[in-house]
Amino acid sequence: MSLIIKVDPVNFKPEDLFPAAEVIRKGGTVAFPTETVYGLGADAFNGNACLKIFEIKKRQPDNPLIVHISSFEQLYAVASEVNNEDKLKKVWPGPLTVVVKKKPGVPKEVTAGLDTVAVRMPAHPVALKLIEISGTPIAAPSANISGKPSPTSGKTVIEELNGFADVIIDAGETFFGVESTIVDITRNPPVLLRPGPFTVEELRSVFTSIKVPPEVSGLYDFEKPLAPGMKYKHYAPEKDLYLLLDNSSLPEIVKKIDKRVAVLVTEENYEKIKNLASKNVTFIILGTESNLYTVAKNLFESLRTIDKLDVEFAIIQSFKEEGIGLAIMNRIRKASGRKFITNYPF
Ligand code: TXA
Ligand code: MG
Image (tube, rainbow, N blue to C red; front, side, top):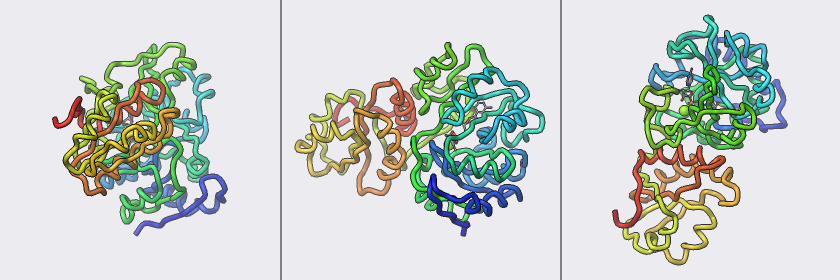
């Protein structure tokens, strides 16, 4: 069994986290909340400790980890060269990860042998305090078994990792629900590697110019993966998931559905189609069109719900690819293995 520490995300006592910090210092693993998703962390300067993360997650060794820091001193401890430092002071703490040149002391297990390292300062009080009292940066990917959706609640982390991580800190639900935005700032202009809560529009306001490769839509793979993690199957439920390309065909489709199917839609679309749906349809409400951050927050738990329901497969509506919608569509395309439909039956 893992040691489970339950804390309030804001009103906790630093002492509550002492056993977790002790485990980090001794080379163990700790699952902890961030404002995006939960991470599974270890001392970023301890290669053997970081190897345990790969074993627990069954993660491919060529998929590097994100190093989480609580101060700029820790940035300089892992990065040999930092461009745009003034800009990072504006955006951190927050859901933005940057790829920078690494210092030799960062173990190869963390960076998968690359000469760069991904770094972020999370905006979650528990994460920041844990890193601070551990006295070392914490390397952490998302706290899921590889291929599954990232966990966005302590409950899901416990379901997934109890008995595997040494400690699980349960601080309830995370805030954003999708993983951080990743930008490679070793390039000029910086290149977006993964869309996330820190939107392209916000990135442009900070970095002036930013390259957005077509691959961030999730429609194609990077030929030579820019973020090595991009080439792996991601976020997928066990059951088949299909992306509906045109939401205007929802009414026609739900009328015709003749199998047990989960349909994932916003409140607004649910209101339009709930009275038309055949009895075979189970709806999962994702959030509201008027604030797509609600959809991002519920997305991964909704994907996990598909597998818990008595349905054969699932259909999910599409979203406009702007703002947080870009990150939502990237995750949906990967979760669906890029399967899409325009009609039913298909
Ligand atoms: O919000 C998040 O980013 C969460 C929380 C825990 O911080 N972390 C997370 O890590 O989602 P995850 O599982 O996505 O793994 C790290 C990602 C992978 O896609 C990996 O390829 C990329 O970061 N990455 C790490 N180091 C990199 C590097 N040097 N260059 C390019 N991509 C890198
Ligand atoms: Mg992950």
